Length: 507
Image (cartoon, rainbow, N blue to C red; front, side, top):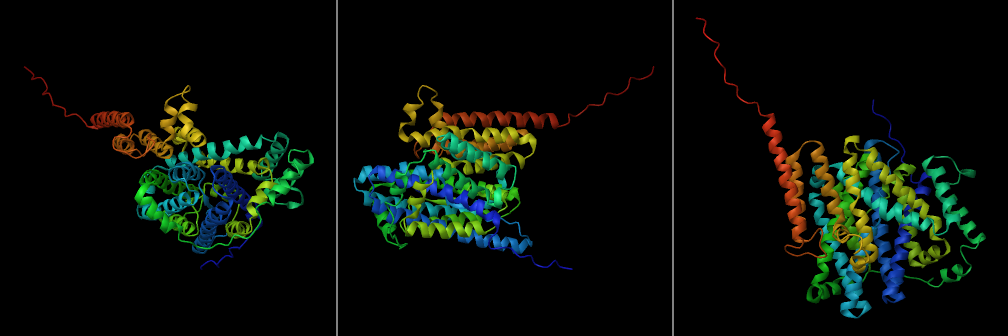
């Protein structure tokens, strides 16, 4: 007898925690975008009137779509515990577009509006490329070991999310540590908060109140918060089309940045979908990559300049027990908050040290999942795949000055930070293959890594022929070593022919 269909709720209590985690992470990105672009000389009318609304449209479209796919999966599997995929702007990709697209475009054109149009066009092209990559997404997911993909995701979680947000937590030690304690008690130990208030909301209320009470947050934050209030309609424009002409006539160099970071974005989506499957919700990676590409393109039509992706925080939302409600609410709130300039107001009122511990938890959950969903023999592969992101963190924070900043530490930091996602996946995949004694497979991954290095997708500042010859040679040498052990393994496994010796004759 068929089971009766279950009711998949539009919203439940657990969605509140997940909403705040996703909302605060996205709002942090939006604030960074605003501060950085204003610092580069882009006018506030452009930042708050075009860039942020365009990004909000992309976030809204993606979140609404993934809420629908969650309902579809819940109906298909007759479950109520399905969690919608989180969706937003990828932090590493955001920094690349800020400093690798927007800044060079402004320096070359000397005009903020022209630079913005070039970046919009680059964003549109990035979305189109990711949509095309979706055609082979499932094949790639099948052939890449889970330990390699989740290890790469854990590297992002350790550096850009848990690590960076722990730094922010400690900027206000009294406030930050108290909020972190609330998060550990409520979200890690799963102890109910007073009056059964969702943990994230309780932490924000208590943390914000304490910050103002002890003077860590001054009253001037309120006056600054309402500076940019107004009405910024979500209206499409032709900036992307005009930017295409500028891009292909005088700024083709920008595309050398767009291609590798788009491949990174597609792989990030794939990794995060893989992480979600490991946590219990299986989504189609090809569909997700296509949706991410489409969302990015739609955002560009409205003036956005930052590609979007299935977000790394999804597993954190799964741990919180969220459904689809947090995704719907996130999309709706972002549209409203952006249209009326409320994002800047909220970001100014609530200290970063109050929301940062929530994201520390998200990073913790991603790192834990990378280990928990893999066999213990693959732990070394997960750990090795995490390491390149230490270098990538330095690269994105110091941008073009990274080489000078870390020159006295190691010359390998800059090279490792370039294409860290690819390096993480290939090192992890080679390690998994070697652990399984699949040496020929390890050699194939080494050869692919050599090819990526040769054309500049790894270990090089830009795409070029023979871009990183020393790394190309290094990976080829690794591959040769793996082939030697493959030969040795096959030789030992081949039984030797035995020549029968006739027994001595009896005289």
